[in-house]
Image (cartoon, rainbow, N blue to C red):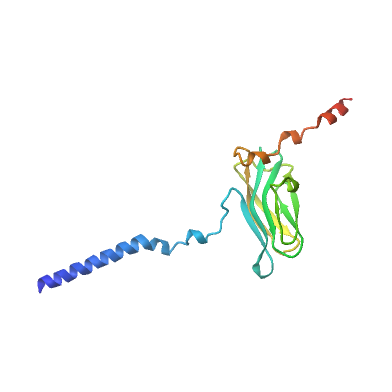
Length: 182
């Protein structure tokens, strides 16, 4: 009888130990949100949304970033702006240094990487590696605004080098120089 009781206690102890080990190794995720449900910017830029009726993301900004050599130089805004409404939208981006607008046709997107959609800030306002804080975005087709931080990058990465505004664009052309020298 003593052996049977001892064997039962040993089995129960082993079962509790196994259950505890299983709980300890798998229970960690019970309190954590699964990574696949977290919405984040998977690239170098940031995102923002302007909500319309029924909290729909009517205007979406994706992968927004600024490419500039330094804080005092010209900066080019890159990213995509999507208009999910049935109206043409004027999207306003208020940076610390100036305000820019982008026209986005109804149901379409504007890719700022395309030359015809080039969006330039006269002065970047922050050095590469830093953030332009509290950039506000608004639109004529939504009543909401959003504020987000825009990363500033330079041409060190090969994929962004073509978008770095050059000093040549800011210097006078040969014709202007010749005519001013008389």
